[in-house]
Image (cartoon, rainbow, N blue to C red; front, side, top):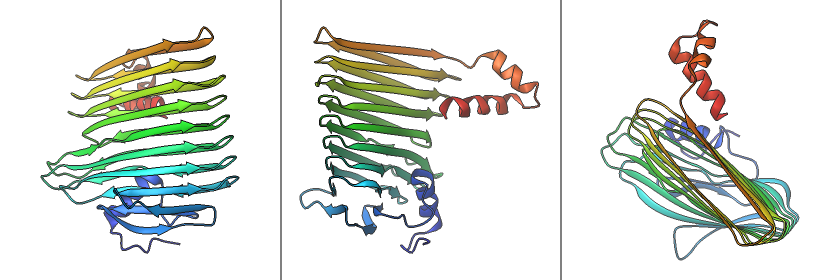
Length: 311
């Protein structure tokens, strides 16, 4: 079913960018535009309820729910909006679901537009969550597009979460904070893709506590800083039990870009195995030359290399 939510072409374009939505999604959803819910649907196994004390929602996913999804994208097309939204996800035992979030800001005015989304996940025993969060900015105004997401993940025994965090275009300033606490046998996988241009600034902070026996975390960030942009990747994994933790920051620097990688590993148990890898460098000249021999211009070759790197 095509959108029938009184959305204009810009709003529809933002939804396509951040949530790959061209139609009203099957299953549960809430679409937020310019600080208002413009469409919501709960289903038998997934209930979405508005909070009464702060702006935001509680999303209740019943135990044993399988193969269902919930979409909660946010779009802003008015200059000057500043909002803070709290969304809590309660995922029942043995559930297996996909959650698609993300925020798109189109700012054509002179005032800053800002969305700070605080998402808290309470993942039950043996449950699995795939979470996708995409951020995107557009618009020709002088006002900034600012996004400061906070993701908190509390994982019960033998649960698992796969998180895809993407920001490729148009966000002027962002501080992305992820906090996770894992119990016995819990498994967290994070894949971050980030690109900054011009004078943009992006800070990614991860603070993961492996509290349970045989818990594990694998956090990998791939990033490109071009123009005069600045990036900081700060990742801390604390091993409080027999566990495995791995972080990796792999970055390409271009033009006058700047990148700072700050790893931190803390082992509080003799059987905690923690590893960090970091690499920052420019695009190899031989890669560009090879693609240019195939008929690409230098700029096209760079674009192809970056697209492949961030895929």
